[in-house]
Length: 201
Image (cartoon, rainbow, N blue to C red; front, side, top):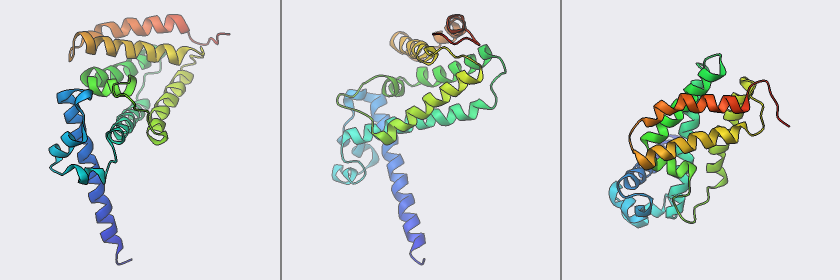
């Protein structure tokens, strides 16, 4: 037991370094785009030599994988905190969920690209990182069930609407908020299509 505090300190230091590397990687991407992400640039930003970085992440794709998992885990945590405060009506709830999603995605195009597109050639998320995205999708299914939206295509339509709005915003007016004007209409279109209390064959 005498060695346990040292083990804990070492684990915390390693986690702190891990988090610092991910912060640096996001900073590089936001400055140079996904094509500019290299281990050398990340190492320089955190003040370490590239070989030292390899002790934490064996490759650039390993860094991207950790960023992917982190992004989805953070979004899932935000979604979880929103659940208890959702309105009782489906429209109000979907407006709140859509606003939270687009606040995050329109404010951070690089994060949106990683979570919803394929900006890094050759990248496929690991099972561990992909599980974070799956949890968010399962949360969406529970949300739709909660409001008795039972159309089997509802989740695909919903994610397509939100991804489309975020992509359009980031492509045409990065940092803007044109999406805010469109969200209520998008929600109404969604509900008019999938309905409530209706299971489609």
